[in-house]
Image (tube, rainbow, N blue to C red; front, side, top):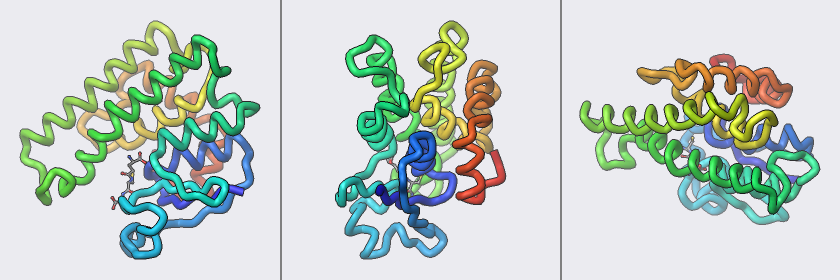
Length: 209
Ligand SMILES: N[C@@H](CCC(=O)N[C@@H](CS)C(=O)NCC(=O)O)C(=O)O
């Protein structure tokens, strides 16, 4: 039994989606950002950075959304969230997971949390630079999908498509949402049609794409 500490629509989404795809028994604990619960003494004990997600695995709390996706894929190979270990597609899968975690996640974090960079609001120049980094990353993914899609690994769905679609969702109110790139939109539509996505919306109470 896993325990997932989550907040609706945030970086915990990919872990929640992976658990639903796997069908793994899990308990959900909502971390209420409105009450700043992520910074409560109790939560900081299990996640010293005060972030979600935290997934308790075999009694030990673990963090980092992309790492948790990789861990769940490894622990549940029958769910095929990742291609078989040792296959060329597995190497592609690692590459895309790390690309998302390196090129998108930190820039989104800075976009949504200006205090991480030391001020309550970004200057227009910094905002533009972050927007540029995010859009550049999406263009890279879109270029790849145009030639090799519709999924990141080609014809077949894998867990990295969940990660990509979570990040695409976060751009929905940005100046250029990821779904404005046609191949990205196609991938998002495929993932949004999955039962796991629809179920997560019900459970987390999400309405907006
Ligand atoms: N690198 C971490 C980042 C997690 C993260 O930034 N989570 C955000 C929600 S998307 C959070 O916990 N924000 C609350 C806060 O910083 O106060 C991961 O990918 O798990």
